[in-house]
Image (cartoon, rainbow, N blue to C red; front, side, top):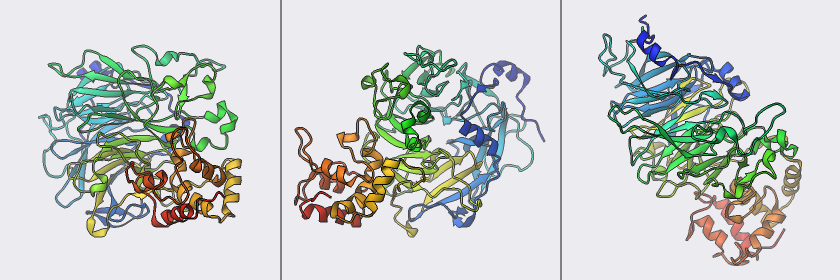
Length: 578
């Protein structure tokens, strides 16, 4: 087998840069995942999905299927499509030093895939992006590199046909584009995306060193957060200008702060809006015991619209500008930039892209696709986030494209662990999975269904908040008109968003299983604004919002006919309180 080691000259150049040993201290969840991730977990497949083995266990919209492209990787992470139609994928290799690799994937005329490793012994490659030069850029903890995968070496990668199955091709030369990135702490991995309006501008995630800026023993929480301050602060997004003769930046600017870990980044293709998926803090229950029974859902992850110069609140603020327990009485969160949309807690959004392809139906066009990687209940799914014409989220709740990605009780089906999401030029979607070490392809066939995204389902888990559990037991025994509305409409469609405070979206609070409280809130005047529901009036604002008439439809896609019938019956009966 030919060696894929770097040349001695390159090693000496990069030893203290992109491939230098990292000192990361990933979370316990990450460590556990790395120990488990052998790339050997296998799905049960049944039939085919556009020529690939079709995953049997996952739930998708009618007409949508998931096919297995290839497997056997250790922590498959970023993926991007080259102008040639080949795909570049980063294999992180786990959290140990210099175990990573870069692969090329190519689809053959018979619809199978050929793969070849074109680089190895790389330290934790993660983010992958294709620059305006058509070359792949790979993010490592210390830096960002680029290369020509088809470089004319003594043993070059062929530009067509299957790759050979034994031996690596001659490794291409790497160019260090960005060096000296901070690589220690909880979030050493790098993700980057190129701007659409200024194509040589590259945005780079520099994740936080800590969870909530804790320091010392016993732990202290400095104000301001010392690690987040200054030009070299952590928990930021940087911008690098590569519009130089050799496309090597001379410096960087800090675009935004207060962002704990920005692994999901997407730029809208026409407006240029930069969207960030925030992986929010951990262990809030350790700072405030009142969260002990709700920690699985708090804090929420976030989607943020990045505004240059803005501060998004980490480490002192969470959710809709609530003050973190460690910082109560020390900070004012009202002057921070609030998220555009809250996502389920600990769902870990790691990948995002706008869909502009032609394969999927109109409901997908221009919408934001986000992977929920998290191993907890709210994770392991692919969702579609409704956005406006400029790509801004907040007009509706996410809808499921893939769910039911749970580990089966018999252990035969693995937990879904989606990382990156790519909308390919042919309109299909590619997803990498780190724990299972595979690459998946998602396609739509109109002959098999309409592909309509699925309404999200509430997570049911043991050990819920006792007060909420008591309300739900009480609600289960209620059969008055509004209690049916609570069950079918509010709990299934509204509480994931409007049950989050402080700063409830639209200043409307709707609590889970709280039929008495929610009926009162819907029927009361809101300051200078009328009540959302007027008895006997099917032109009430709530009805119009649910139907999407004159207002953005809430929830996105409306409610099913059974739920709407319950709402209609309650209002036409005079909207009696339970």
